[in-house]
Length: 134
Image 1 (cartoon, one colour):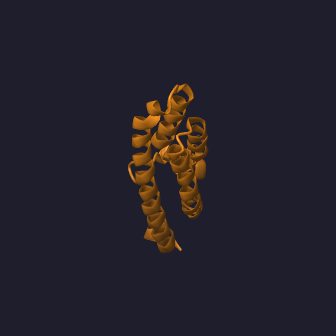
Image 2: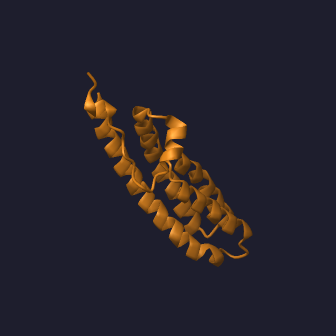
Image 3: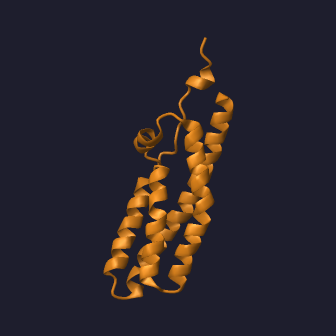
């Protein structure tokens, strides 16, 4: 007889690209929880580097800092934020003055803040889900 809790799929937040998550991890929800946890452990350092680069008004360093955080969004299925990081890198690359990245940075910063909260929420949900399956 099958345990209903073990058969129930995990429902990700609508912002997360489930197809991407499935392609990377299948239904290994314990590993997915571990990936989300690892991303959260690195998140603060990476975002602090972005803020420091912005505050120093150093466009090449800012571009490099955003480039460094970009892959983690793919690991957690936040492909729209990953694409937003790429677009911001492109803007930095073509910028002739720091002021030309300011508006777009505000939008990116908001996405980074929202993404951290979303990843934290999903990690908690995954932890509960995995504990119920154990």
